[in-house]
Length: 243
Image (cartoon, rainbow, N blue to C red; front, side):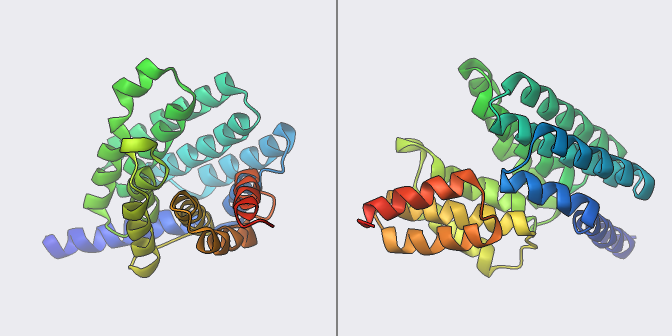
């Protein structure tokens, strides 16, 4: 029975990863991370990803993918500072991830809840953040209990040290944990690499390691050349270097 369960978990994990490699999803993901897309264009990509997910997936894997689609659409609204619309998408994404968990516990759904709550913490009132912020770490850890190679969950735990302000941050610890993601067995998608590279650039810049920071942000921009956060950070680093 134990061997059957282990086999099931491995196959299920592969099913979630497989869905993330399909062009109908990666086209949507890459357009969102590129931050060079209109709402109308994003909606077309969302509709395609939603339709394909419903046609090719089922059960918990389907609801996780639908949650990912909501996350991406929410990011589009968030980038355009349409926060009410972004909140609605992120909250719907959480509901879908919870529905996935109702079908059976899986790392991807816990990770999605962590990611979605993390985005809500950026735009919700302080009282909500104080009440819900710990859900990010709690759900990321639940994901890693099931699948220790979940790159997005590992990133969420490491990024808090890289980006956290003042006493809430520890850029040196962040760098150590982020580099461990790159050097360990975690399964990274294109956006995971971008997130890790960008966070390494940010953390190194905080420590005045500007040349190292520049190298990392250039690696991030090689993946998504039009990402505004990465471009702004590159400009800040170059100014520190006197360029």
